Image (cartoon, rainbow, N blue to C red; front, side, top):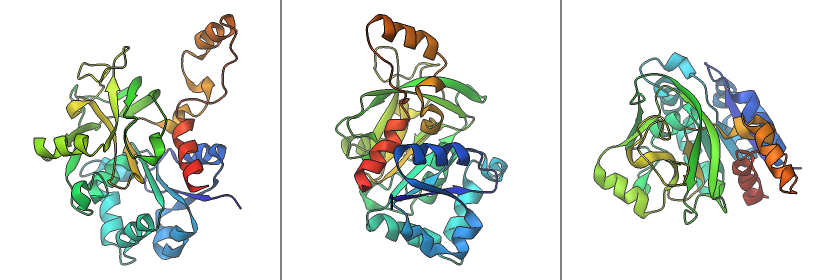
Length: 271
């Protein structure tokens, strides 16, 4: 049996089907599970190798993005928060995409600098431009990071679609520690592949162009861009142009998109 991937859904999450499909494409036996079902049957957590918190607008972003969903996990009688920590300690992987990233940050599962799990050390604030951003971005990948999901990757092109994606750490010291400990896996970059604060390359004004981070173990990963929406070559808006360029150069385009490699890395790790 292939490794299992549990994809959470419910309460306004709306990227669960795409996330489930991306996990299955990478090789996982993927299954969508409502949060309430997981709270009533918590042991199913340990029967999976990957848990995905997909994108969406859980609880309508009331009180702030990810606030209500994370509170439900932290304060549920089922003690799901503690079980998630046990799950990661046993080698399980956790991926948070967009709203999922916001939830993991609110829970204190990310960035967990110095192993301070459960302590909120950062936030994802409204975009600096003041409105919802829906566009494709280029991402620089830290090849020296211990993050399981970004292993052997260089640069990526993925779509973003969010209103609250500006990463703000508690203070400058924490931001420096994140960089020092190689926990900043992804940064928004320009056409040259250089991290930037300039809009629209950096769509939300994130500090130091942070687009994705991992915990100290490298097994919890959160990012604002949507890899599940770029799992195929044909998802990219310029796929026709890219295909012709490759064919004229004598190359055959790969059917996989940049986002597929994030899920594939997770699969290869647990496999």
